[in-house]
Length: 133
Image (cartoon, rainbow, N blue to C red; front, side):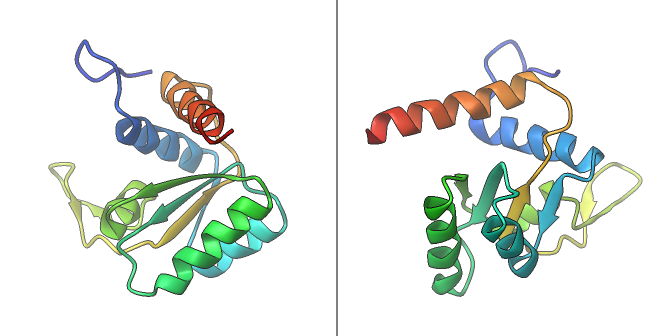
């Protein structure tokens, strides 16, 4: 578990760590076609959607599937950021991401280990669901 500085971890930092932990156990599915399959089969625990995608119908499709199957959805602003967080890049000698590929959608079907970041994500979903009721 890693906390950023002494303060609390932000939602995006927590999301990045959760995606990293899920990748370790092969629990992340990337790409629209594969994600839609997982969402439709109700195998997803969480979905991450990039709002910067060119095709707005992608946003509508993924949002509708998540709403229909009660799957938690987090939207982020940049598809390149999501690509980097899901491992669609090369890491150079200095540890910097290079040749990052855009990713419009990612689905988590296994979180891997429990962590503070996962607790932050779960709290976010609890509060957002409570706010909608």
